[in-house]
Length: 303
Image (tube, rainbow, N blue to C red):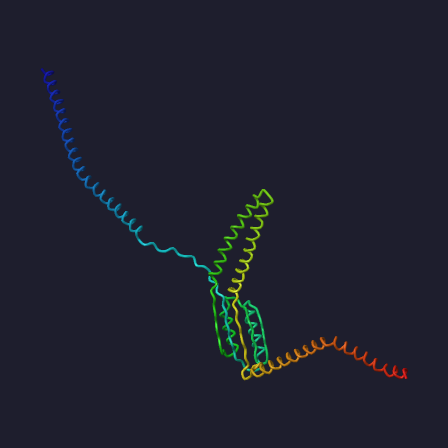
């Protein structure tokens, strides 16, 4: 009896445990499904919002790209070419007496101290002129220093831009040097004397043009790198050495001398032409005199 009761109690305990475990599993599954449903409902809007933000950023980026493409582009900076200007200046000064030589030396020193030189100098009574060549960078400073050597009576400046001509020469030189390289290559590939002579003639012509253009380019560069300053000095109160009257008298004297020389030359020419006739006339006269002297003797012999 006790055994039966123990078995029954054991069965009841086992069945209760099974039922409890089953109920607990069902409740866990229901809670898991609810939590999953709740989580899934919340994740969908989050994903949609993320997709929306990504779409907005992509759209904004595309719009920015299109705007950058359609926006007017700033022009590229053009490289600045060196400007070459040939500068000329003329300065006339009035100075007091006794300082003409000193002022001419001061103008020369101003040019030489700036790295220039004296191109020409002329000096006479009461006046002088000097032509200076100075570096273009020191042009303004030299002109300013020269203006302090006396009272400026006149001043003129002139500038000629030769940049276009210089650039044109550079382009032509590049083209000719390219032709020279091609002709040199053909010279190396020549297989006959005739081909070599033909290529050599063309190469000589190209090189001659290169030398000519190089000389023109160096001339322009020299004119632009060195400015020309002509300075005239005039002593106050001293008349120029050559006046209009003096010039007229000198011209008249020169004309008179020319006329005298021309007349003398004409006389010499006439005398030279008359010499043969004079010789013949003298011979005839001598014969006639001899004949006249012999006639009286012949008449006396006949008697």
